[in-house]
Image 1 (cartoon, rainbow, N blue to C red):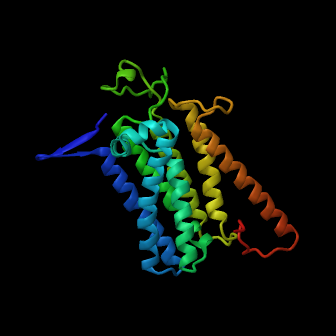
Image 2 (image 1 turned 45 degrees about the vertical axis):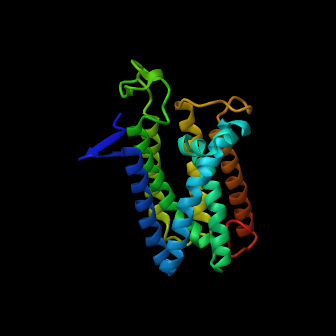
Image 3 (image 1 turned 90 degrees about the horizontal axis):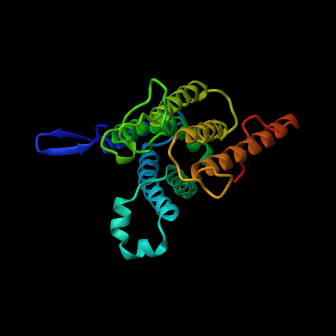
Length: 260
């Protein structure tokens, strides 16, 4: 665990540093794709900044909804918001909804923006999970495998080797990013690249959760993240099957993968 780095009298958490780095890296990738698709810089800035804020807020709110009662929140809402963790799925869903509203208000094509964001989202998670690893959060389950990691300073994990689940996800998302980056210029239907991202991320997260310490949901003892990931995967599969049927019936190749 390397939760902090000291620079003179200033202490910075590695989690915050990697969180910021993930934002800048993903934003840079997002801008490259938007620029290639002839979108303007002001649209990039508007969407990028609002997604950062809405994603952070949505992840916080979703964590509180899952882990706190309304009474606990009302007793000390400020402390709860500051000290609580985050759930990525909540932030992702909320930021996508906000981005959708912005794109519609600015009369842009949502699926072009979504396809441009897909590689950026993947590399953002890859970088961010390194911060989780250094911070000693999002812990994996105990393991006897030779690459098990001990996180000293965490009561429940002292003298236990754990799956480096954070690095599992970081490496997997890096490969997903590389795959999306390679296929991004091909003539796929609008929304197809974003669909592939959702499918790959959903499958990846569903599997990774088996290696993490999680709280089971009421659904077949799966974690909340697994239930949401499964729902995303099923939704994407349904739409890709629908798209394939449309193409077989003579639909246009450039038709959107999703209809909104």
